[in-house]
Amino acid sequence: MIYGYSSLSTLMMHAFLKDQVGGHAQFLTIQGLLLAAATMACGLVLDVFPSLDGLRTIKRLLLMMSLPLTFVISSIYWTLILMFPRLIMWVGPPEGSSIPTEIPEMWRIPLSMDLSLHAVPLIAVALDFLVFERKYTERQQRVHAPILTALYAVWYGAWVEWCASYNGTFPYPFLTESPFKIRLVIYAVVTVIAVLAFWGLNKAHPQKTHTVRGASSRTH
Image (cartoon, rainbow, N blue to C red; front, side, top):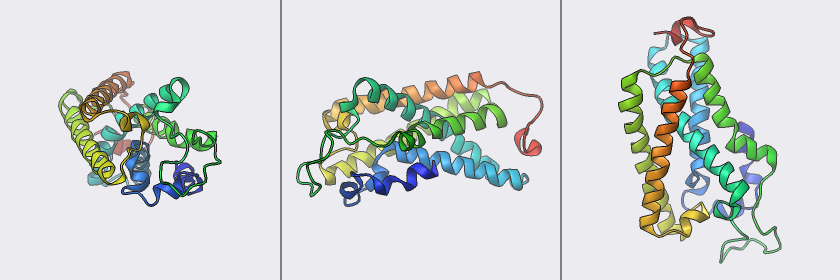
């Protein structure tokens, strides 16, 4: 994850994005990566200091957000990149950009970076949850998770719409090409997918009666 984020400045599109409102933070991918990294960082600190109950609560909240978010990012990205790449990859330099036009038709990124950005975050948080964390309670998955996911969806939708009002384009072509009403539907559908993904992952959790790592921090 660190490799993927630190390599963003080497991409051709960085020259364009660095001058845009929101920069790379416009991308749901980057927000998901940062949330996943924060979740894992909290887990590492708890391994060293398992008595930090406040940090444990924060980690559980971050995990509740990063699990469905990284699932949505990975599932949608790889589906589109394999089947409909033009819906998610920018084609050539944006109009008015100073970037040379003699570049590949679509801005592709190296596979190693692609996996670091669009696969590793989901793998990391999913493994952490399924192997080291306890299952979420019925109330947490039925009430807290949908509310938290909906709040994040509203935040991201408002954020990306605000950025686009200044930049004149969205970070993803399928949003740029869609009118506002369709974008609202997209935000809503993705939110539902995220909630369903969280429920599925929580259901798949092999609830354990013992712990593997950080025993006192993972069982109560």
